Structure formats: structure tokens, C-alpha cells
Length: 354
Image (cartoon, rainbow, N blue to C red; front, side):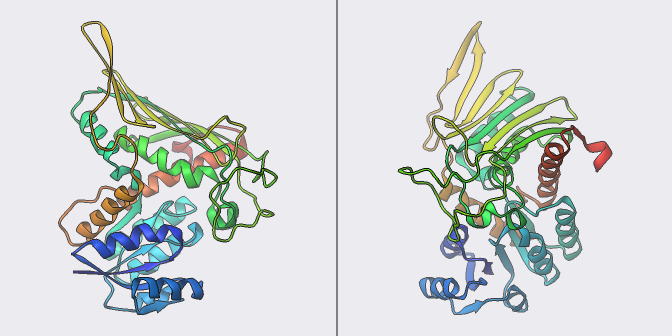
């Protein structure tokens, strides 16, 4: 039985708390949040009596074996290192950190403590991802040499801490782009990045003037505060010659929201979003193949269940890690390089930087 605490009980924590409560091999025993009112409400809701407003006090509890870290981005690395040093396994919501230096410190702490440090790359656990990866691993698409991913919101800056660069680390790139960059990199076989060219745009702001169209708002939404980018795009090159193009936005003068993820190999291609589709050729004829499966697109709740269950099994030693901390370090290198490239208006070459 793995005894678990959840640090940070904001909206994303629900997708950690519920899987822990459903898993017969885990017991949720403690919650922590700096917002005492929210902490008390969650404690009552889930009948958890061990409540902490300081994560350090929770980590002193020797009963706890593992923690989920669901706090602001700027605290991920600090809390993860402290938890690992306290002998706890950690599941860290994406992004792993705000900088590569911080990410490496988490990796080092995990190695020294000999504990699991899993990064919340939840899209790796989707049905559509698992199905496509079987086809790729079997060689059906051949060598994957190009991928393209977009998450474009026409109106979707959540405000609050998401719009505060000091706490979030950035805007749509670090909030949304991290998911699809990781997903493509994972499906491409995790090739080593060699260079990045990126662009960021700060032109539309949070568009607080827009009326009659609803969108998700953070709990601490303040329409007057925003210092993160509206849009980021990037071209990432890998040492095997493959490349990835990504664009992500919080706000954009677009007709509609768009989620699109595609990979291309020398034997076939595939779309994983907006829904799973394969493309190949037989007898000199191009075929679009429509797989008959329950979930052709990403099922948010189901994927989080699998992510948390996988973390539990890794902590108990019954599964090998799918999203280890080392992968989080590599993704942070890409994210950091995109922002640096945009700021300096030049290509970032990894052999010169890392």
C-alpha cells in the first residue's frame, strides 16, 4: 500500500486525487495548500484529516511514501527536490521546472535518493497515443522524419498565475506547447535535439474587451494582469535529421480553436489529433485508414487515471517508468531554447549551449 500526499489542491489536483482514491494499492492520507480555505474545503470533501499549509511539514510525515506536486510552476523543482531528499517518490505536474538548471537539480536529487521522479506528461497515457505508438514501434510508418503540432486558442488566456510569468515561466509554450512537443518527441523515438528557432508574440494581451464568448479562467483571474506571450512558434531540429514544427496560442485572430498533431514517416503518416487516423499506400493507391477504436482523441480523465496508476506501480516496483525525470530535463532544454531564440532573434544550437 503506497501512502500518498497531494501538494497543491487547485483544479488540476482533482485529476490526481481521484485516481489515488480509486486505486486499491494506494491510500491518499494528506493534502497541502497555502490557501487554507481551499485546503479545509478539500479535506472535508475527501475526508482527509491530515492537512498542511506548509509542504515541509507534510514531508516530515514518515508515513507518506509519495507525493503529487500540483502547485504553481515556479515551485515544482523546489518542492520536488525537498520531497526526494525526504525519501519520497514524486509525480510532478508539467513543466518539470522553469529552467534547465532546476530540472537537472531534480534529476540529481532523484538519482541520489534512488526514488521515482515522474513528470506529468499525461498525453503519453492516452489511448490514441498508445495505439499509434504500437504502429510506430512495429515499423508500420517507417522512420519518422517530420512532425507538426498546434494548439491554437482564439480566446483562452486563463489569467491568474497562468498570466504571471514569474510564477508560470511563460504563456502558451510552457502551458500548452510542453504537452504537444513532448508527445511528438516521444512518438518520434526521443531523438536528441540539435537546434531550435523560435518566435514569441506579445500583441493581443488577454483581450479582456471581448464580450459574449466564454473561456476558462483561473481561480485567481484578474483581467488587468498579463505579461506572458500570446503566441509561440518554433522549429526544432534533431540529430537524426528529423524536425518538429509547433505553434501554440492563448489568443489569436483565428476562426476557431484548433488542436492538431501529425507525424510523418517514410512508409506512412498519422494524425493523433483531432482524432486518430493513419495514411499509407498499397498497390500504388493512397489509403486513409480509419481505426475502429473507442477513443480516437485524447480522453483527459482516463489518461490521468493511467498516469497516476502508472506512477503507483513504478513506486511499488511493478512497472518501468514511461515518463522519467530525464525526459523532463530534455523537454526543458527545448522550451528554454525556444524562449531564448525568440528573445535573441537567432537560432540556438545545443552543442554550444548544453
